[in-house]
Image (cartoon, rainbow, N blue to C red; front, side):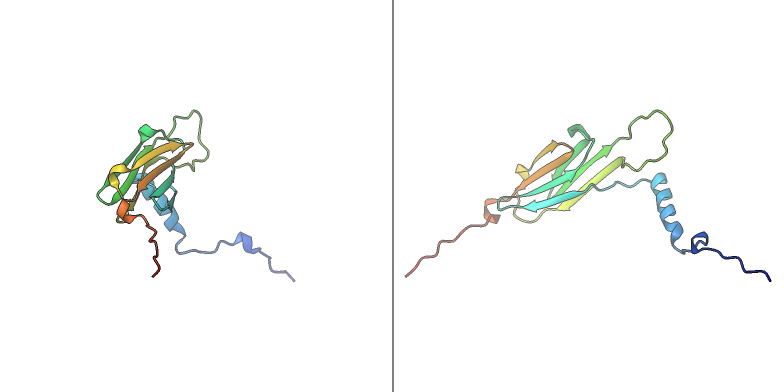
Length: 141
């Protein structure tokens, strides 16, 4: 009597109706690349908002920081490096990037300052005097 052949579950490939969408997205990115958005931390103090944006490998000439109305826009391009030999894997981001955020009311767009150090762009957006908290002295009767 013949015994049925045993197959492990790992040899069978389960059909995923959405499995090809990831490949389709990668294909569209190569045909019409979209700007990527860098990672950023936003903190608030009593006097300002601070945006720390990760942009490793870039110089100040590669980055544009603009305040347009009540919007902060950080844009630029990370150019692909010229390499010798055949690449076996490419996972680093290259191309145009864009980080945009609406600024809250009560900021002074004329006094925004930006510095780039160790691959982190720090943008400081000061609050106006009226927007800063004031301590009110309580009087007694």
